[in-house]
Image (cartoon, rainbow, N blue to C red; front, top):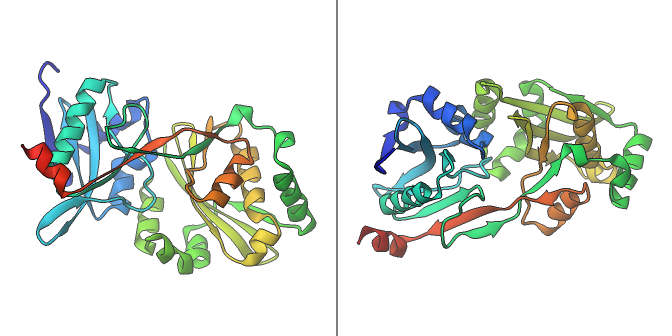
Length: 292
């Protein structure tokens, strides 16, 4: 890779196998960046590619008034440059991205963030550090409530069951049934998209869409389905049950955020720690600067 020649390759022309292999071998591999994942949640996307898929950068985009702009798809928290860890080349990717679009709204993993990006919170729990006895008093109280209410945790429920429980809530998160269906049906190459539910009797209180890839669990879409879910500690119960179930097969439980104070405190109460990512938002004036 003597010269820095970055190509913009349309999705229809992309070598998916080579692209996904680059994502997998990256030290910052993220499930959001795999081709099948982006195909499910993006309107359109292409990839910036260096060499023979030595480094890649996925770019979700839309068009308006004949112009393309980069946007944040739902259920995508971190993208960026994947592959070989070469900071000097990453700068070329950033420059190429900014020169191609009038408007850029993009999220980066934290390895080498671009200038002008804003730090965002992402809370993760290394599973080998998890100890139920060290949970906060609020979480222990929730577990007592869930036991007293005789809640049931049902893992790996069918997609139809998840959609039946969550359909009314999807639109609030910018999601559609087709997106969730596509994700669930397209997961492959060692990655899994699964659904679980917490019930009291026959009543679903809380459901969750989660992913597992490269020994990392992603807490993608938690949905509280009724006020009883809060009263009975259903979300706490679900997290603890997942940690019990997967403690020997995952290394990281990724809570994904949050910028919302109450949600952040909830995740931190499991002794989760911050692994920040970066958010870059550029407008027409930045575009003109990079075009000079």
